[in-house]
Length: 190
Image 1: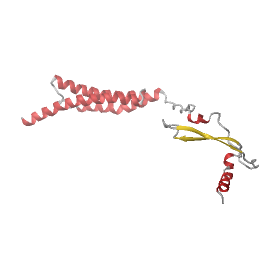
Image 2: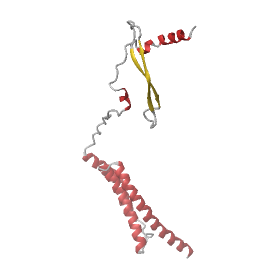
Image 3: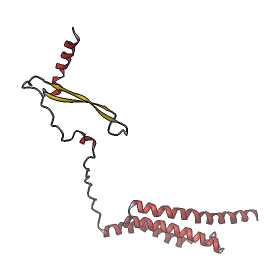
Image 4: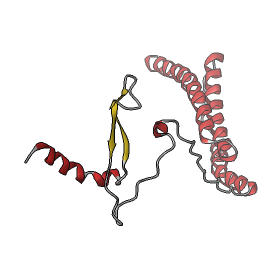
């Protein structure tokens, strides 16, 4: 079979891919893609095709874009629709829940006072007593921060304040416990 006959047979099989549209077709060489900096597109020439008429059941050609390179340009902005926030319970219910949550703590403190809290190990020197008092005040500040979180703060704001309080508590707690450790070691050796 001569070469041109074989080539013509293959080309007639591609007629459907051209949607039976006759006319001038440009031949271009594209190397790369839209994301490459050094990609290029070179015109090699053109070819005139005279194709047969389309049969009745032939597929229709897709709609042509106004600009063939528009698919590589910026796309329109996608706007998201976020879910509306859930309705919060009434403030009275929130305060009642907070009060019920704090009730065991208040009961615990009253119980400690009735039993007689042992404060004999509390530091008596001014500097260690200040660190021990600051440590207990820091624990109270953490509890207050939790209450504020339940009432009006969001999670990220609470965590930000809690990180600062945590560093403070580590510093003053270490100082207070170091003093207690040193006095207990002195008592054991005496």
